[in-house]
Length: 320
Image 1 (tube, rainbow, N blue to C red):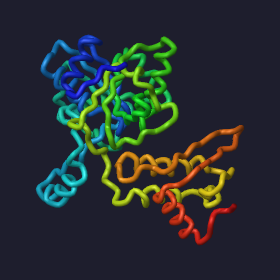
Image 2 (cartoon, rainbow, N blue to C red; image 1 turned 120 degrees about the vertical axis):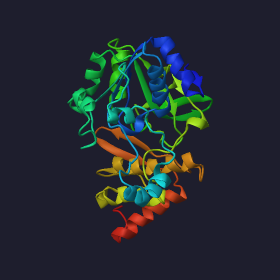
Image 3 (spheres, rainbow, N blue to C red; image 1 turned 90 degrees about the horizontal axis):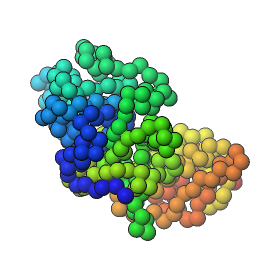
Image 4 (cartoon, helix red, strand yellow; image 1 turned 135 degrees about the vertical axis):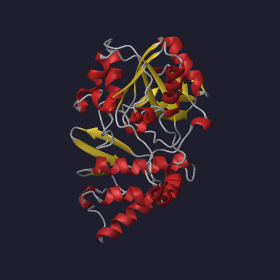
């Protein structure tokens, strides 16, 4: 079972104690970054030059930074309202300024277009890699720590963690570890806003060596909040072929129904996560031969609401 922490500095110390002072840390793309753990490791290495810290990253997310007084007065209140709760990554500012400590490196293989122009260090340490090859590049550099933001679920007293929106390279390197081709510590930070995604990214607790889990380190995800989750999910359904939408009252085989189940499952999990309404049903996708099958037993009010919105938008019910 993993060691549980509520203090980022304590989990950073535990990582250094377990792994040593030569840290090669993998960070998932975008939303998957465990910001508090990353910042604690950065602060520890910045204060102790005996620690060599390398971050392998992709898509460093940063809040907009107005350059002029006019920009600040215009967009500043919007930034405060939308992104105030998102913790900045401590390495991003020094990286932009060319002021990283000499014992700290940040190497990325995915840049936001134009974000790192005129930043020589970032460009010189960029890895031009196809995403499918990213895990092999990271493993070849001696990866020994992976930090990841995760969703948490406890059922019947058993705790499981989901990689949520960032299974990408993490599953690849976990497979390499299981095959004996890699050795690293997987360290998690729990975030209550991440969806608990089923599938291969749903992991038992013993896959992790340490977990940071505290209300003090919970934070809103990097995205402007949507005013209504139902309409957000419905927008995904509206982009689907109409024939792919299966009535809730029956069990159908239909092209694209697995995609429909994904959007509806996200709605269901969103309800459970916010606590506004416990989901009245579960959606399951089962693949029999090559035909996806969507089954529902009952449907929550929100899910029925989405369904009827889709029906109204097309002016007719899905084929029976």
